[in-house]
Length: 230
Image 1 (cartoon, helix red, strand yellow):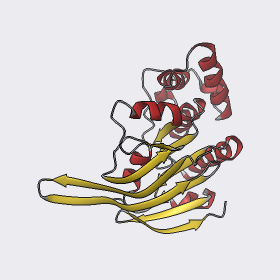
Image 2 (cartoon, one colour):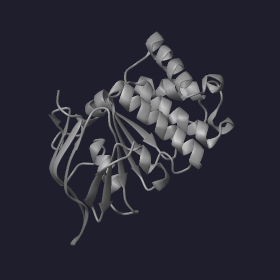
Image 3 (cartoon, one colour):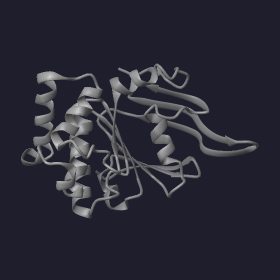
Image 4 (cartoon, one colour):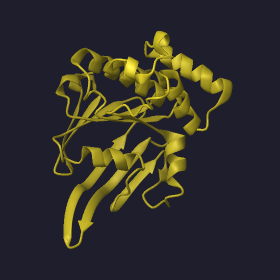
């Protein structure tokens, strides 16, 4: 089977009039099943732009990106949602939970957007809420949950759909040390046990030891790559 994500000579240039800003330049990376990869770098280094392109939210200016062997760089806007629905789930720093929905309902809505409904969706939602330690908080509104609990709901929503690729943007940014590590340990456990590809954009050095591989970005390029100690 093809690797989850492969990029070749990937570049992103923003243009405004005659001004050009290079956000990404010549990114070559292969992301594999069962590994958790960290994208580290200061603000403006390009890690969030790269994550958005990997998630088929932004288009590259040039280069190629394949998702499980599907070349997506030149797909039409009407084709990209199908790629995201089939292969990718997202975890955001700001949780992105609907405040009027309970934790369980937020997970169920995420499943509905993936085309999963009925008893299958209910089973998945309840199982994943239990997996993240929130079986007793399923019917709580987000405002009644702590920051760590809300982030675990966001993790449950991403994992319940069984997407083979999980992309996380600063998932520990709003969390204290203990809760941040718990979230990352859960993602690592899922990646290993279920052979998922997990990519995390972060500047949180406290969790660096939990990654299988770390890519250090600066000025839109990968400056260094090293194997983690995890």
